[in-house]
Image 1 (cartoon, rainbow, N blue to C red):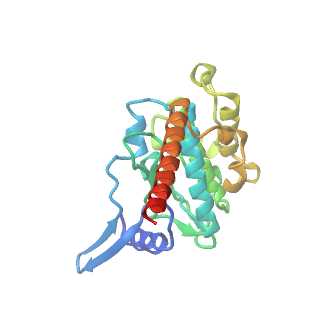
Image 2: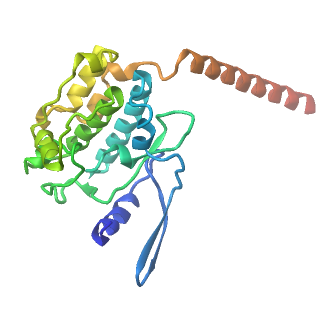
Image 3: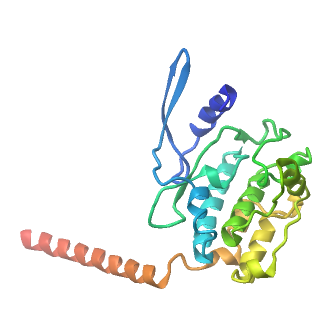
Length: 252
């Protein structure tokens, strides 16, 4: 990481306070090094998590999508664009599920009015308007998140090629396909959701706050098994409170 990116990351991340964003605790400087003390996240990143599984089930992606888009909505409320949303920058915080995470690597993040014409990001994830050298805003991160959900649902990259140049060319064009044999297990709502996020024209692409109302994201947060566990926990909590009140009455 270059010194400029490191200083920028420190500047940006100090403004942030969100449960799904990596937190900086301290910075130590010496003549030859700058050390950042960040949250310790031990369960690798989303790229490592998806690789052996090939793809996630739709319910898992729905939950992760809701969380990631909420993070992007939070960033936009602070006038900040991440500009490098990708699988490797989503750090997994649980080994029990595939949707709890912390967003990391704010080295190329910026406030909207700063360097909004600079081309940056990772090939295959970059919003087309950035590659076309056009002005861009928070919707650039929305496109990148769409690439993530495309990969998680299909197990495929939307823009593939023999080399980086070919990948960037397809990425710039922004044309995606939903081959029936690959997407047959995904609902129509899920496919339409991904299409909205990966709309090549940023004017037709929604902001995070808008897409959070999408019908696909309104599904239940829990499976039947999770619901039964949640109800059991609620009943136990209620019983404990009642027992506590009864104990207080007796002591009085």
